[in-house]
Image (cartoon, rainbow, N blue to C red; front, side, top):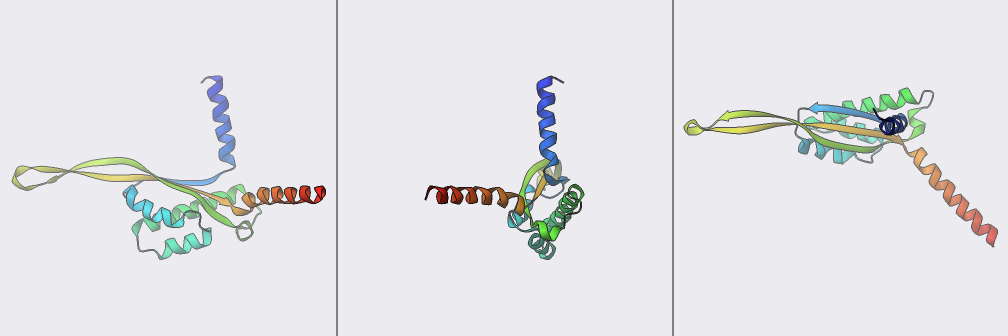
Length: 152
């Protein structure tokens, strides 16, 4: 491995240490059906998202419920001693990519055959704390206000 690749790989590893995510690979539902449920919980608080996924009748919601619990667990392991209730967790990003397709044949009339694609998907869910994003913005506002007061 070249030095440039090693440096960029180390940067990516450091960036991933600050992210709290979970991945679901080769889930045997179509990406289109999974995106319907994923769009419902995007940018939602974790408590509300868990409740919505628990009560939703869609099959994909059960799989996303387990994935969200896994992402919360990953957040807890990286943030020992911090309570979830105080951290104000939310679903920062969720995206669904298509996975492998199993190609099957179904018998059709008059000796023909139709191809069937059994689709699967990959889901990535990233959880973050709202406090971490709000604080730098609030600091900038405080700095701007203090500068305006100094000029007066």
